[in-house]
Amino acid sequence: MSIRRKRQRPVTSRAIIAFDLDCFYASVAIRARPHLKDKPVVIVQKHLCVTSNYVARSRAKGAVQKMTPVSHALQKCPELVCIDGSDLTPFREASLEVVTAIRAWLADRAREAAAMSNTKPPFCACQRLGFDEVFIDVTELALSEIENGGAPFLFRGHVFGRTDDDELRRLLMVASQLSHQLREYLIAKTQLTLCAGISHSKQLAKLAVNMNKPNDQTVFLPDQSAEYLKTLSPRALQGFGHGTHDKIITWTKHNGKHEGIETVADVLQLFGDGQDGIRRLGTILGNEQHALHILNLCRGVDHTEVLDSGDAPKSISAEDSCRSCTTMEDVSRRLVVQITRLVSRLRSDGQLFSRRPRALSVSYRFRGDGFVGTSRSVPMPTEIVSVCCSQQNKAIPKAIESIKKTALSVLKEHAGVQEGRTFDLTLLAVGASNFSDSDSFKGNGLTTDISEFFIGKAKRIDSGKKKSSGTLHHSQTPTGVSNHVQRTDSKERSTPEAEVRCPICNSKLSGDNLMQNNHIDKCLKSSCTKRDKSAGSVKRARKSLGTRTLDSYFSKRLQR
DNA sequence: CCAGCGCGC
DNA sequence: TAGTGCGCGCTGG
Ligand SMILES: Nc1ncnc2c1ncn2[C@@H]1O[C@H](COP(=O)(O)OP(=O)(O)OP(=O)(O)O)[C@@H](O)[C@H]1O
Ligand SMILES: [Mg+2]
Ligand SMILES: [Mg+2]
Image (cartoon, rainbow, N blue to C red; front, side):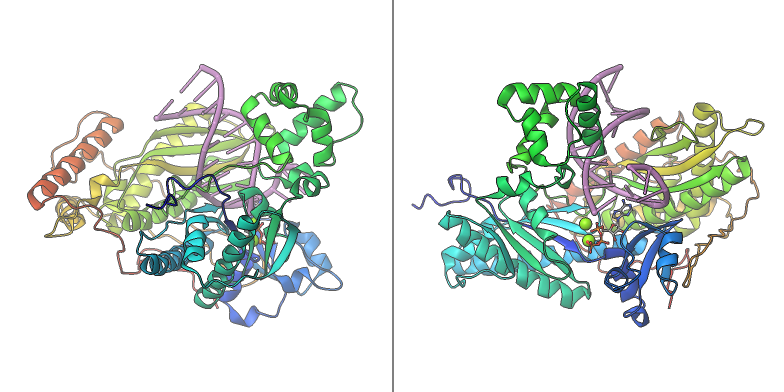
């Protein structure tokens, strides 16, 4: 028997690819508006250009970079095309599109490799970072292709650094070939270009990805990575954030040390002396583990694994940071906009992932209170069940109303935001989290899709209730900076205290919201397990829902 | 479990 | 710096 099985494989190097989409928001926006292809374009959130396309970035005179204030950008480049990007939906969807394509390609490639060697298809973990970056651990796939033979002995793309480790060089050669072919596939499939960095750790792959941009790739051979790292700003290391930087700076000043921390070498000079340095930095940061991680990064040591992040997010939120929000009418109006967007996304999420949130979080920030903000978490109003589980569009207005009431009472109870008080809010946000186990929904016996069962039940209940109406608008911005005038019917409607019934067993629900949620979860679970027993065990049947989401309730933004 | 913080894009 | 609009993981209570 060969010792070279997956588990027993001795500690060899890994091959990790970091993908980063080019000027992501701008590329997505321009893909939907081909006539803008050769114009300088920026994506605007409030008064900030969060990104720009490469036409804007590479202008000889008046170049506009990422994260530029709108006023500054328009000064430099008056003919700039501004596209509003405060709704991230198109970018989130494009992100899922890309990751899905990546997974599909890798699975295909893994099956091919497996067929040749008559083994199990090697699995490649994919981890998203933000919307436009993906780490992939292609070690197993690359090893498999090396064993199968036939892979050329060459790198694709740029090569930075060197290595004496022949096995690693071979591994990264094949990884660079995988990366190149996968990128070509993605560009053809999505019309979005991207860069790649290929190395033996997440850290170095991430550093490599930025070396040749756009639409290019770089292999980082790591033998002298430590020397290279010393010249960088420590902020270039992922994990070494502003807080860490700031704490170290204040410490050096307070302790009469020399001037600022400019490079990684500076950090190592202060804390690079083994165990005691780790302890000293740990004290400064208030966390020794973090200190150890930071110092490892400074030396180019990074063993963090690529954790597959799956497709379903763990939380969904919508926020509005405002200059100054001082009246209840304004609070109410802004809240409804964000809640509407949240509920819309929860409906899509429910359809995609067969789940519903159990917690609602309300976050806010007052002007002046220097710190980040405050958040309170309460049970999600049960009205959301009809939206997520039953996909009832006409239940959406009630869910919005209910969440609005809850959010307003949270603001009143915990922040004193109410009529007659003075306040000045600079942030309002709502979020959904603590999603129900998808087990409750996954059931799907051999006979009928279990979700139809839920829909049937819920429909009966809902038809017994009285209908409500409401008109909702998405801010629509054809082209150019909008000073976002969002409309909403601000009429307060006192919803009658309708009795709450379980959408599954139809029994009346008593107790507080938490108890109601618990009941519904139990019901979902028991009805599901019952089905499973009668139908025999089914592993993971439901995967793709096939149909594209058709959102009849909200105006889909289809700008020209 | 929640709130707060720090990190990332 | 944060500005904006997200989303993640860890820590202490
Ligand atoms: N601090 C931020 N706040 C809001 N959005 C951000 C922030 N940083 C990045 N983004 C958005 O996430 C996307 C990806 O970020 P990234 O840093 O990769 O820049 P990019 O626009 O993709 O440009 P590049 O071609 O340099 O990668 C961007 O399009 C950007 O608008
Ligand atoms: Mg990018
Ligand atoms: Mg990026």
